[in-house]
Amino acid sequence: MANILDRYFSVQASDELAARRGRSLLILILTIGIADLLVAVLDALTGTRQYLLLELGVLALLAVLFWYTRRGHHWPPYVFLSFLIFIATDTFTRTPGGMTALALAAPVVITPLIAVPWLCMPVAGAQASILYILSLTMNYTLRPIGLVILGVLGLVAWLSSLNLENALKESRRNANALGESNRELEASRSMLESAARDLQRRSAQLEASAEVARAAATILDMDRLIQQVVALIREQFGLYYVGLFLVDPAREWAVLRAGTGEAGQHMLARGHRLRIGTGSMIGWSIEHAQSRVALDIAEDADGPTGVLTGPTGVLTGHIGPAGEDAIRLAAPELPDTRSEAALPLRSRGQVLGAFSVQSDQFAAFDPETIAVLQMMADQVAVALDNATLFNQTETALEELRTTQRRYLGRVWREFLDTSPVAQIDYVQPGTQPGGDAGPAYSPAYTRRLLRDAQRAAMVHERTVAIGSPPGVPTDTDTSRQAAPPQTALVVPLKLRGQVIGTMALHETGHQRPWTAEEIALAESVAEQVTLTVENLRLMDETQRRAARERLIGEVTGRVRQTLDMETILKTAANEIGRTLGLAALEVRLGTDSGTGVLTRVVSPGEAGSRENTGGQE
Image (cartoon, rainbow, N blue to C red; front, side, top):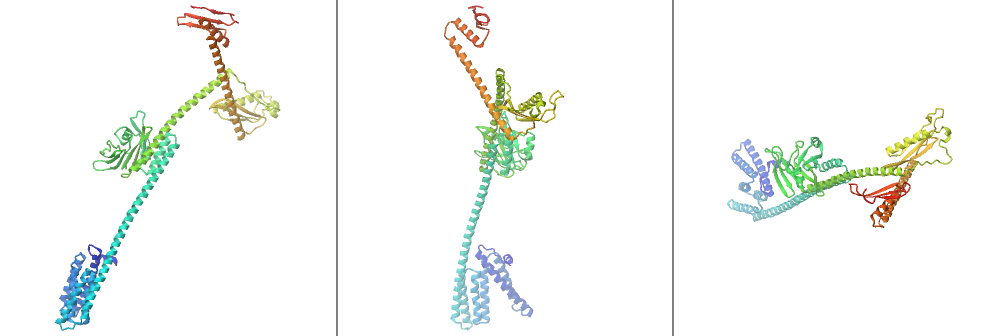
């Protein structure tokens, strides 16, 4: 029903109050029009046609009023009121009386429904004047109370309609104020939702930054680090593509080292690289150590165009039909890129490379996002720099370990050559090497078993447990019995990664399973033995160096006791020869021509005297 009223009784009015009056007028026009149509039809059927033309004229008038009222014109209400006044007057002239006089009050009552309130009093005055004139012309006795009632009715209609109109205006103002408040609340809600979305996005970005920082702090392998970083940035920021470029040693090209998705794999496979300089966003970013952003890369008839922001403001550039200019160099594997940013990898005042982050959305990189991405790029740059330094340190440390192992091996060989240490064996008192087997024990087989275990422990540099089951031939003498079972635990003596010996625990007579506690105890003892023998070696070396230094001091002291050249040479030759136990020692002063002073000292056992040429040889 409401839809029908809105469709056929809508009024093109400037405000809601005028629209309400127009709809009321349309309803009255339609009601009177239907009544007039029924009367006209009834007159036509009954043959009473003296008023038929008038009734049809009324229908035409009502139709005109209906049409112009819907169009929002202001004059139809006045015409309609005039029509009502005419009808009421005609009714009174035909049938004068009290009841018909009341018909003159209808226009007064209807006026506030279809016109402005102040019109009630003029209509009531007009009706009273017409009623008074008609009573005079028709010799009709009109009571004054009727006129008073008509005037009061107009006043009441005017006041009530005025109050109603004021109430409607107040209600409309309240509605407008409420609507304005609702709009403000809606705007505030939209702002809060936008702020919440921004906060959520910033939180996600900071979380992504924390993830990248965590990966950068824990991963020291460069290849693994860059692969994980580009995957994290793409996932956390919802980007179309993320690539990482590193500068080559000649600092001429930026080489793609990691890229996300199939596009990244294709570009890595073809060795994608960009020249450092102004030929691309990556090259420009590396050369100037600054970020660069393409906010809007749109396809048009002339080719892509870009709106670019840099650290100093907004730059605009046109990308030609080939997709290349001094700002951006597009890759054919990434056709859906709509905005792009290049972020330099800066660490310790040097640019190591750059990030390429691309989105399939326009203007995807605002200043806050670029700030977070640049912070992550700097973190990754420091991590890459640290990984490089770590690899270099690891290489240097490994070289140092190798050198140290070689040194330890050499000094221990020299120590064992100068001070040989025999193999030290310990046999538990009251036991025999062969256990209950007695004469079946074969020392040759046991030595071979231990030698194999010691060789394995030294080669593999770890503890070796080895055993021999019963029934193995003891030696080449087949008349002897089979060897009894025996086991051995050989622990290498490791000094700073270099094996300098072994410690073997040997059990004969039965198979012995070595428990984890026994192995740990043996390794702990071996470690202490290693440190002890190393300390002894260092002490021996220190003592020998001290003796050598003391000897040098003694010889130097005796030499400095005289200022005679011959005496100095003889003293030096004699002390050195005596100290080193030499049979003969020559001290020669001269040039390459062979001339000079020759001092020859002969040990008493060989010549029993000292010779001195005292001049030319």
